[in-house]
Image (tube, rainbow, N blue to C red):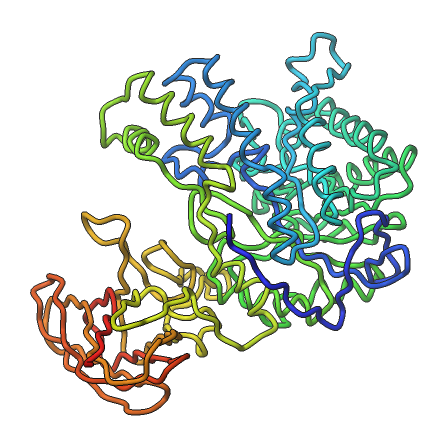
Length: 579
């Protein structure tokens, strides 16, 4: 992978973290061995040990065990086992961690599935005893080694607890026909025993940054309340289990931070506080709401009242504008953060896993739109899907990385691609500069804030492809490797920075489609010579439209494309020297 990225300037509250130091708490701060403030910039490895259906674009219930049953129905149990072995071998490798370090991350959150470390209680050969499995510990050891090599911290996150910790069953791979974590003392004891086992193994390992003991509990313990626990006022069982786990860990490990999460997907701390020990961090999760001080004020209040550090343990699944604004808000308030996820089948994360044609046909079969593939065809498709999880086969979404790691503290724009025009050249309309909305581009729909808007689902890129800004990018019909910018509205614009070998006059053409007349655009070069053009009706076909002559200087130039009236699509700008 050739993508190399400059690290952002360190902010006021940020210090480099060194993996040989245990992280500790000091009042409201997380600090290193020199008592220097540590601002965690992390990302979660969702999909690695624990698949969620939406990451795989499946049309059925999203628990991993359900997906696995569908795979087995196509290729059998033994080949399914081989698929999962390849998936875990390929999904996260040292190259992934090396890349995260190069991009500016200093921590990784590992969402663990308990069943890679121990058997479910109903499969234990001796009731009440624990069978320990090598797979989970070996995978964790590899991550420890890769993080150590990069001076990064690894945070262990119990994402799928025995029995499952909530009614949102996809998160924890919960089977609702069996007792949940909250309905089974045996499940609670197994979870406690697993944390003790982990603590015994890693108690002297400073690469481990913290233990996140139960991810996103979402279970009501009170009558006539929302089943996901967002309205509970006491949370007695949640607090008691976390206290028990903490006490059990502390008997063998006094070194590591313990992270707690409230009910209702991590944010309802009614009855959970005050903290019950030292060296603890309060986590909260943030999705699809406004990025203003009010959106995090309750957690800032907890921090001051209880003198405990707070950490944004999970966030993401939105547009680049939302990412930039959320991260800037966190860092302004000295709150470390961890994004979700690193990779999946989708473009709003740093790495995108490509869908191979065979797996696409399987998805169509599962949706009822295609015939069942043969076992051989399905096996080949799943093998390729596992192969595509390797970072060397991923699509690196540099626009997402730029939004997270640079734009949160810079208003500068950067070219999306380095285009050098000699006598002629082409710039794709989708390759506008990287930067903030209102600076590199302007789009009227730039993120999803539906929780703050009362359920109205706003969005970013309506085409959900190529880039993750507000600009709406779509795949060309019958030409899946090409894209265009569409759904253009009045007042929207994009900026393109490019290089020219020779000064002089050039003819500018645009590849345009429009189903009706009335569209109008204005182009300026280097903030000068604004000129508008009427967009003709092309009956929906792609046509090359002459804009006219423009003057370019040698070296860097900038084109601004401004929509005066929408109703058309644009694929590219084409330059040809008049000499």
